[in-house]
Length: 345
Image (cartoon, rainbow, N blue to C red; front, side, top):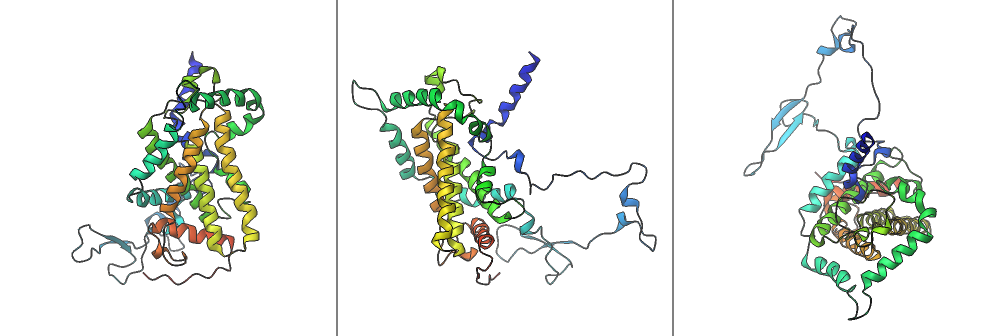
């Protein structure tokens, strides 16, 4: 029975709503290497030419209270001198890893009135439409029949993709974009932000509707991966993958590249998003209607993320400046010749 300790892996199933795990793509997670030191002679004891231990050397960083008059919340600044003219020494924006920067976008998104009655009811209607005529098979029963056929006819062939996409699929998007976290760090931020915000939105409505998983109704579906520890509707994978595709398409549009250059990428990412969602159906983890709802939800979330005035090339014009900053800089990665207006403080 000691083998059952492997079941502790299921604690990671919150990651099955998407890519918050991403153990395989930590290229910018702020770690990734090991620096050894000596027990008998730690590196900090090295000395300068004038015999000063380097461990005693400090950069001057002053903590200042720069709260504006009348403000209700204190504002702290870090400067090179204890004066307002000191050089700012805050943790740099570019140093935020993609997966952690995503939480800055999520904070702004969560503060908006995105969770509307209209969105709730639109998703609810997808479920209500499954009830079917009196005396006939319901839409849900027909969906289950479809899932049984998919498991029989396609699961074996799709297994590699099902397993690869179970916990994360940002890797697949990066491959489609011919990018790495190092080559396109801002696009990587956009992918992570879309993944996290999509997961947040999907979990909100999973809680609201609490739809049982297909394998609860039809145990014979026997999903080949652990059934996630949250409700079925809407599909988190469908929500996130669709939102990721739309956010990258938006960055490409901002880049100013011709349609002929953008279209192959956009169509590839849309197809990838559909495939990610359908693989969850083949695995018996989601109904097709879960995927439909996920795409509907992603479209609504995207409208909130991308809301802006003007031409969309200034972060100040975005309702969510953290997302605006990331997507504008992602556009520059696709087109280095893109000219951006100067930003004012």
